[in-house]
Length: 165
Image (tube, rainbow, N blue to C red; front, top):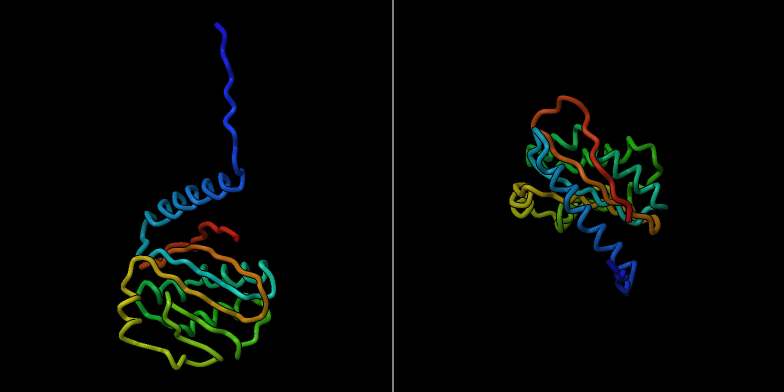
């Protein structure tokens, strides 16, 4: 037998890499969402940090905080717990610059409750199965996104996956 090998022309390896990354991230999120005891899938997005490593440490401190997880499971937008987790990270920040959002809803800025705070919209958003917590430190260009679950009961600390952008 005479076989001919056909090598497909790869137009853009970066496009393939980005597509593969998107598929793998989607699968990882689906596996995590199916976790035992999980009530909500949470994306923690920390932006405008001194560096990506700075953002990573703060994101994981928030994502791994049992106080944050239980607040979100109880649909309580307690931004004080987010501030506590930022402080627990050990990273230097400027509290007067921090902005915190749940989804698109700004809850805190400049060290206090936001003037845009809307309790009705926030109550509605907190009922969703998938939540995003965004922390903007306004210190630089570093960013990091990680994922976790809120838990109704916590039997042991849960650390899931992280994807750096």
